Image (cartoon, rainbow, N blue to C red; front, side, top):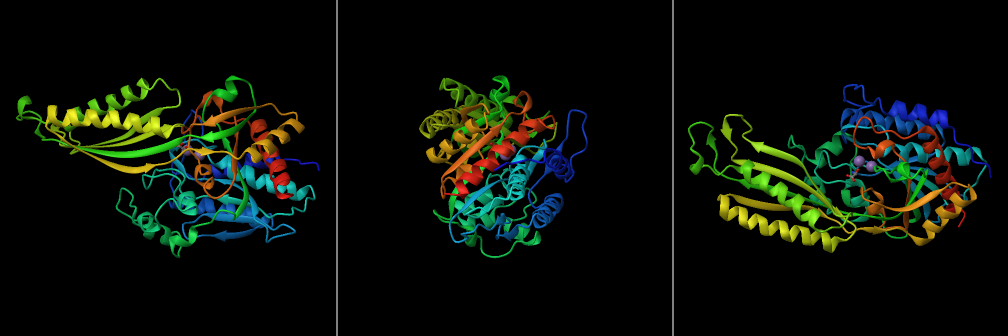
Length: 417
Ligand code: HGY
Ligand code: MN
Ligand code: MN
């Protein structure tokens, strides 16, 4: 079977998808902002559905907007083989994160169809809703609901910064029905394989075009609210202040210190947002909210960092007279990829004489949750300087085409089982 990837068309479609954005053009690359259920997200979804319809695939949308593009196999009742990713993009992101897996998956299915393949198992491309935590503070909403790891009522009550709930936003976007109906159960899929840019420097640095992911690190998210005693920046004397931002600064540095102290390269932590109240230059901050993103391939080691941070919070409460509350947003387990799918990917790469490297994914992906209901694996392609979540994110057309071709051959093998 000869699998020919239409590289030029794939590039055109990636460029077209990047136009569904609110980001201003920048000189450093293609800046994309496409927040879930925004008008540009809704338009991008419609554009993608038109492409899939043109390719002859059937379409199903679930109650949260996960969208399933299906190519029926000769034995359609067998559990399907699936691939997919996301098209939502954080503010001022690049144009390849997630989209390579969705448009690469679409082109892989089209290429297999062009090759004359009649898959035994159906092959399904899945567009997963809200992989990024931008709007609702928690990532992988669509795949969490598929996996049953997020309570549907809690999910529908999630709100964005304007106080709009997931329930209302998904309804406005045209997605109705009970969120509980999103759940898929183990056995629903025969296999899941996600194509994604590495979002790190290793493949490019080692001049290797493909990464076969063996495990996905476990992310956890926490929200800390520090409340002190603020007031007039001139009249409130220093001994009378309980400056919430100074306390937050100590907490942020403590998080960095305890993360580095593990000595493990796989333990990473970032305080990515810091909301200061009242946020006026001449007013002593009385309240600060921090969002912490901490990850590790070892969840116990991640928890030990959190214990050390909590001890420092206790010290800050006493020394600075502030209150500090901690809210758990998510604390997920890592995912191990399926030995069988890893072996399949490896054999496809070997047959294609395509060099590959086995590696850990430190970024999380929808595959982290699809692993709860199906055997999974991920296939990485290099990205320039390891840059991601920035407009200068870049993946070479040849790398995207190779990743798509390996994905296609892997899907074909798995669909024949
Ligand atoms: O943050 C992540 O790992 C993913 O890109 N959402
Ligand atoms: Mn991302
Ligand atoms: Mn991604």
